[in-house]
Each structure stands twice: as structure tokens, then as C-alpha cells.
Image 1 (cartoon, rainbow, N blue to C red):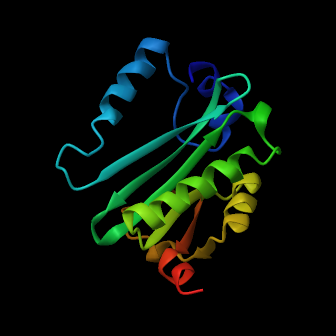
Image 2: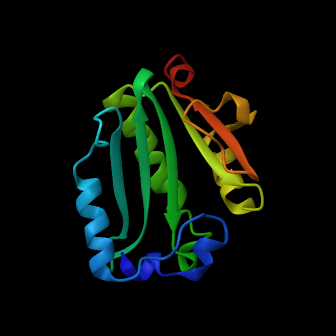
Image 3: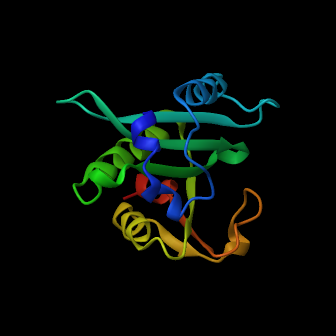
Length: 157
């Protein structure tokens, strides 16, 4: 995963820095492995995106589940794998799990307004843009757009 997350293209649109070392990344994953925030109010789910034929990790999908069964949804994929449907496939699998196994009612994703690739992916996944004031999980980073997907309505189709 270190090689995938060291891709400088990823950090054009996300307010993070690449991992400093494999040891630093390993420590971050140890923290996430607990599965909940320190106060126990959030459930953290993280899935590695792996190319089966090469066993190579190329990114991740993550969800933070909040009270009321709403969740933040995010994904990162190394730029060498953009445009191949890999992110779509991984996100669909994660969304299906969140809906069917954890009864998550709605997902929210925040994305840089300039990240057109992510905006298109969210649209393919069924997310619609909502006003930033409707984002229930804190403050939206200036310049980000907010998208939402109601999973309740998918069950009734």
C-alpha cells in the first residue's frame, strides 16, 4: 500500500500528505484496526483495493459510520489505475456491504470541486450533490462539494 499512497497525483485533491515511511503507514493502520474512534461513537471500516492477479494493493475505500446510521464515504486509487473501472467496482462492493450488512441509511462524500474524476465516479455510483449546509458530520473544507446517497430509497426500488 505504501507505493500506491506515495503517488503524488493523489495529493492534488486531498488535504493529506503521502506516508513518510512504511513504518508510519503501518502505525496508522494499527490505529484504524481498532475499528472505532477513541470515544466509541464512530465505526471505522477500511478496505484495501488489491489487484488479484498481481496481489498488488492500489488504493482503499473507507467509511466512517456515525450515529443514526449515516456515514462518510471515501476512496483513494493510485493514478496508474484510474480509468479502468477499479474504483467503481470497489466502491460498489463497499456500498452494498454498508447497506445490506450494516443497514447504513445514507452516505456522504466530500470532494474537491476541481476533482472532476471523483465527481464523475460519485455520479456513476448514484450520489447527488447537496448543499454543504446539509452535511451532518462537521465542517466542509472550503472549496469542497458535498454529495449524498440515500440507501433507504435503494431498498424500496
